[in-house]
Each structure stands twice: as C-alpha cells, then as structure tokens.
Length: 158
Image (cartoon, rainbow, N blue to C red):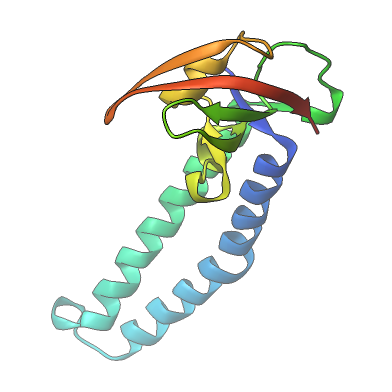
C-alpha cells in the first residue's frame, strides 16, 4: 500500500473513532473473556475460549487494517477545493436522463461509501465517469446493470 488513498476528513475521523473503540473497549473485553474461559479448565473443548480467541483475532486484524488505511490516507478537506470540474470530495447534482429524475452524490473514499445516503466511492463506475467533467456535461456510466446517462447540473465542495 505505497500509494496514497484519498479520504475525506470525516472518513478519517470515523476510522479513528472505530480504532479508539477497538483499542479501549473491544480489546480489553475480549482479553477478559479469554481469561474467564481459561479459568473454566480444558481449552480443547471450551467453546467460550474458542469464540473469544476468534473474536480477538478479528479485532487485532481490524486494528492492523485501520492503522494501514490511516497511514496510507491522503486526507482531503472538500471545503478547501476550488474546482469547476468534478474531483474527489465533490457534491454533484445530476439529472438521470433516462428517468428524468434528479440525484445527488458525494464522491468519497472507499471506506466512506454508502450509496443509500448518496456517498459513492471514488472507485465506483459513476464517480469514475464523473471525474474531470463540468456542469452541463452529459456523462454515460457503464455500470454492472447497464448504461446510464446523466447530465451534470451542479458541482459543489464542502
């Protein structure tokens, strides 16, 4: 992971909050659970011990994953962006040409994406098609479910 990965300030904050939770709550809780399970005797047939060890493995893996993501992050504050074109961090209002409906997307980092709330990953087909485009441009998106046409109505940052 030598390449920097774009992430908004909010995305970094969410990862840091999850990391704090894992380090200060989850990790100590699972260590206690392992201690209690060990006290119950034979570990070879101890389901509580096995479950706690499995949970510990998951927590430690997630801690390493979050640390790696934060280390590789190129944190971008959308409020500081001044661009007439769509770039990472943009809020884009679109007209779905086929359905004649307006939609709005924020282009965010991979971990921040949540399509239901209008946050799409920089790696998504829609975001890739929008990057570099301006207001008034028509964009054709080649998505897994087919082709979609959008007209860019508005671009904003922050």
